[in-house]
Image (cartoon, rainbow over all chains, first blue to last red; front, side, top):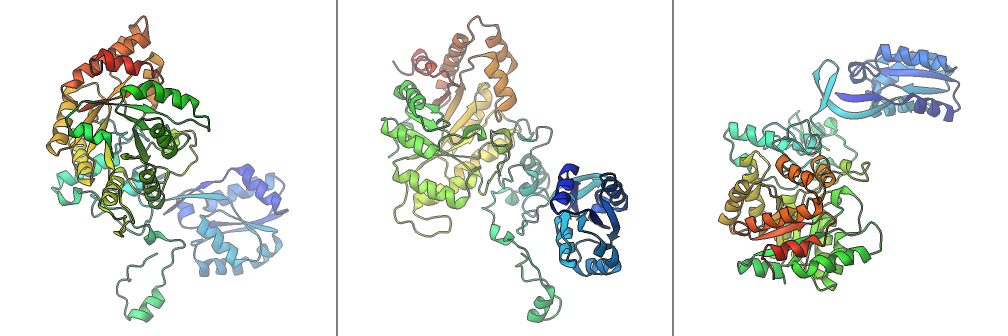
Length: 232
Length: 291
């Protein structure tokens, strides 16, 4: 899921002031931002109270099923057409994808209330960790299911670097070095070949902006078989 | 052509030192450093934005060292440049007469003076050594022929004292397979650990230059232990410097003892003066390496 953090309130207020907005509609997200406790119903209502305390009218609010779904956001916009129409701006408590989806679904100025920080694993309730950066060129087959691109602070494919000390990371000194962990697991699994150095990464697999179109893939290749591998 | 390679190839015990380029364009302090340590060093490392802090480039500073009549070891980190820039600078280095290349990872930006910077790390140190090997063979990373190849003497970093040992051994072997022909180590305090690492390097024909720190004050030791990547000064060494009446003097005596002890094990020593450049000629002389 996408992990978000609340943006500093002073900054959010300044954004609304810059828009010259006296009234705001708040849009949350029923998916990731709800789990992250940043854009669910509770946070939307807390934000509403905060805005009103600052003298900004809240014309309405919604927490749709998922903020990054274009069709879903258009539906929410239609459901709340009157409230949206009455607002000078829309404050979105969702990731950057959700903010942009909302901006496409309304003619009102849209402004973000959260920072999008990473694709996170839910370690346990309320605890999230980044394990994957969606690089488009997965190396987990060679690294014992531990991603060095993400979990090594330097993102080194081959390591440890010269800073590792007694198995611990140089940058995040309370954590085990990712490369020590990878090599230990590979050794435990007797995977000698996988322990050989990895070649430089193909960053062209992660060219921005990413786009996948399963419809045209089906039209081109027929059936619903695997994609061509040109994921990004 | 690399004089350092010739000396090591002949089995001579070498001495290397280290200088940091300035933050700015005034080269006078750096020149003084080179004048102080250069005459007793076979080659001088020129650091690349060391400590992830801004300095004049190693490329330009290495050229200054060369023009002053000394042989530089051009250090290149993977932190600040992508593979295009790294390759471009390596080609530039060769045309500027820089023949020794030390391929290192580089400290993380968040420990430096521009903590907001994006660490690049497009390649890692092993891959960078591979690229340099390709250049020596006459081709770039994509296998395209170069109009004019290089003949770099390729070096890498080694940290014999960091456990786990099996991981360090694998790293030494990988770096040699990537083309490293010499290693420069972090500071050596444990001769047994140094010997086992050297044995691995020697088995594959690579040379090892042992790191020595001039621990000139308790404050410097504290800084090393807290701030510098992977340098851990043992408590008995720290206590010796702390108890000394003249810490700087004791540091020179200690470094000299280490140099003597390493003579039988290493292919050379790399003295990191930590600002006490005048110690370098003394250590080299007192250890009986140069008269």
